[in-house]
Each structure stands twice: as structure tokens, then as C-alpha cells.
Length: 414
Image 1 (cartoon, helix red, strand yellow):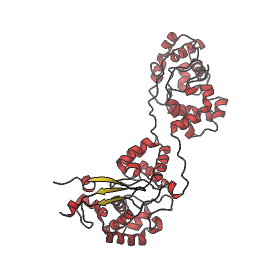
Image 2 (cartoon, rainbow, N blue to C red; image 1 turned 45 degrees about the vertical axis):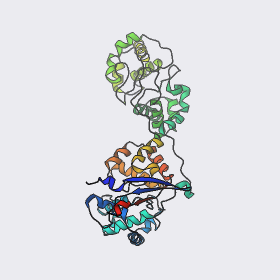
Image 3 (cartoon, rainbow, N blue to C red; image 1 turned 180 degrees about the vertical axis):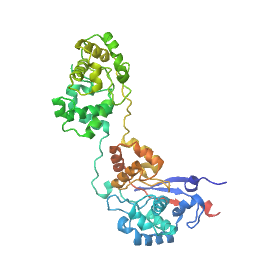
Image 4 (cartoon, rainbow, N blue to C red; image 1 turned 135 degrees about the vertical axis):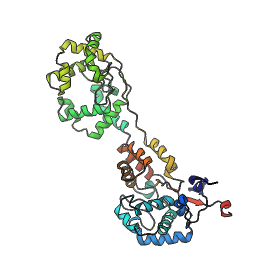
């Protein structure tokens, strides 16, 4: 009976603890280093002998040490540590460079004329070395982890509460609530104030020093707050406003809950602010031809009625998910790359102790499809820039642990 590829190299693994360290020991089905047997050929580097590892050192000294060093610890930005990396993974990546799949000229040129036997041996050599120390242990000063976007948004929004209320729920007549807006709309509105397309001297001044990243975070923070109606008096006739709102439903929803991220929800919004916004569209101080046409026939009384109708509706939260924390993202990464980035799969790379700048580069390469992997493309597409930076820093701080693959005694006797 044929065993699956996974069972060939990971029949079982155990943890062996000592007072100072923990080493992973993975048991593997025997496979001679020189054998060729289909998929199992990918595992040749796992079973290299000590003589083959010594040959691999000679190959490394001739071809690899200029960038990766004889100890496999990189001192060059963007160049990965490869000491203690999983052997079968290293072999496969070297083959990918050789065939041009990875598309990096420096590496392609180095391995272009190497035999597969040489690739196996150099992979086995670097895999046999002690892995790099994490940043904290090496004495390098670690970059501080960046707060998640929602936390950063809360901090950046501190100065907004005086006008827009705690959590973005207005208690001041004439001041809009900021909850229930999709982030795309709120960011566009802030940029319009900052750029002068919306005329408001105070808002322009307040937003003058706010960068695009902070605007994104502020908008996300407010989108994640529990929505509630503005806590201000409502004048006008909501029933009369409901009839007038029929022409607004196509864009803003039947009860003021928009289904379009770039169109604002109006449900629960501060009534005086809504009436003032309609006047601004009518007199042209807010530029929007569609809105100008819709409010052209409204007098002040009808605007108050329309504002009263929307102000009394129940707002709803936009369809925005709370971003995962770095710890939550790392849990997902660890499913393939091992606990704290210490892979026990010889075909999956270890991440622990790796250079942070290299990990950032790799994730960007998967995102742009410069590196091909459906699984990693899907993962990297879901990461915000701050997630990439924090994940890279997280794994750079983890203690890398060597893995030793041993052949079970029963297989030796076959």
C-alpha cells in the first residue's frame, strides 16, 4: 500500500525538552539521497548523509557565502537567513531559481549550471546549521510593533470627540455623527475637507496634518463603533419627511441605510447637520450635481422634515470586519509554518528568527504575484500593510529551533 507524501516525511513528531532548549525531532520514511522516485525525490535533501553535507559545504563556500555566509546568517537587507531552514524546502527553492520560476537574476545565475545533486547537498548543508538567533537575543534593537489600525484610529480620533461625540455619536446640534459610515465614504469626505472641495475652514485646518494612513485608521475606528442615533433635538415632521425621502431611496436606501460604500448612510444622523448639508448642495457650496438637482425644489421646511425623518431612523453598522490582531494572524500562519514559525514539515519554510525585511519582501511578492502560490496569494491579499510589518517583526523575534529528521528503526531494517 502506498503511503501519502505527507506520511512519508511526517509519520510522527515529538518534542524533546531540556533545561535550556527545545528541539523538534521529526520521524521520516527512509529515502536514499540519490534515489529518484517521483514525488519522494523532493525529499532527497532530508536524508543526506554526513559526507553529502560536507560536500554541500564545499559547494556553499564556492557559490553561496558571498550573500548568505558560510554560517547561513545573512547580514544583507533583503537576503534571507538560510541556516537551519528546512532541507526539502531549500532544495525546491533552489530548483525554482534554476528554472527561472522565482525570477531573481542574482540567484538564477548562481544556480543555473549546478547539478541537482549539488543543489541537494548545499540544501542539506545549510539545513544542518544552527538557526539564527531572534532579534532580541542577537542584540539588535527590535522595531516596536505598530498598533492595529482600529487602535491607531482611536488614538488619532481623540481630537474629534469634542465636536462629534465619544464614539462618533454627536451630542452637538449641527455636528454630524461619524458612526455608520463606510470607511470609503468617510475617507473621501475627510480628503474633500482637507483639499478644500468641501468648504469648512476648521475641518480643513484640523485635517491639514492628518496623513492618508491616519484617515484610513480613523474611518475604520468609527465604522467599528456601535451605531446609535445622534443625541440632539429633532425639529421638523418625520412623517412629512418620509414622503419627501422617496426620491432619495435609490442612493441612500429606503430608511437611510446605504448599500453603496461610497454613498453615506443617513439613518440616525444629526438632523440640523443634514438640513445644513442639503442647503449647501442647493447653494453650491458643496459641489455635487446629482444632489444639487435633487434638493433644488426643497424649501427650508421640507429640508427640516426630510432631516427629521432620517434622524429618527435606526442606523446600522457598515459591513466592515474588525481587523485581526498580529497574534490572530500568526495563529493562521502557524498552521502551515509551525508553532511560532518553527515548521516541522521539511517542505514548508520555517519563519522563526528570519530577517523581518526579507519576510516583508516575500509577502509583498506573493501579493503582486512575483512569487506564485495560490495559498500565499490568498493570505497576503487579506493583509494590510501594518499586518505585514507586524507579522514580519513577530517572526523575527521568535526563537528558531532546529529540526532533525530521523529514519525509524523499522524502516532501516526493511
